Image 1 (tube, rainbow, N blue to C red):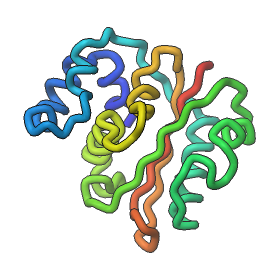
Image 2 (cartoon, helix red, strand yellow):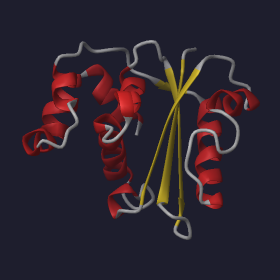
Image 3 (spheres, helix red, strand yellow):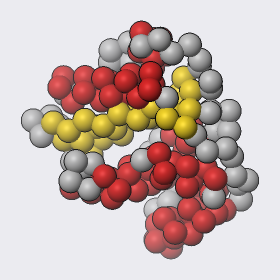
Image 4 (cartoon, rainbow, N blue to C red):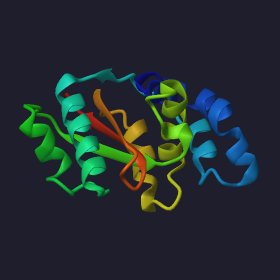
Length: 164
């Protein structure tokens, strides 16, 4: 997942050409292809253990409680602070029941599927997930995945971005 996020951040035009071309050609890319091909690269992110713990706990919470939203158990900021993280936090969440989102059976395929989903950001006002992924002020990220086949979506992803 980190490599896929950093691919989009550090080589946005290459990411668009390799990952979004078919959606662009079919008109289902929500402007992502043109957005990424016109962007400059931003710094790669590094993993942050505190944000990863926060993201993993929240993915598990959503799956186990069959809920989905940014404020189901506190806020992204309050969850990160509870783990000891002190910087600003931005959060992406995604969930899906398709086999392509199962990071347990295919981590690389799930990373590609989830990052594409978030970058395309269909139906999301202001394409906030895409903005988080490509935001150059973020320096670190925590990534959490949890699978619970008894929940509505089976596969839950949380990306917590941080500034320090």
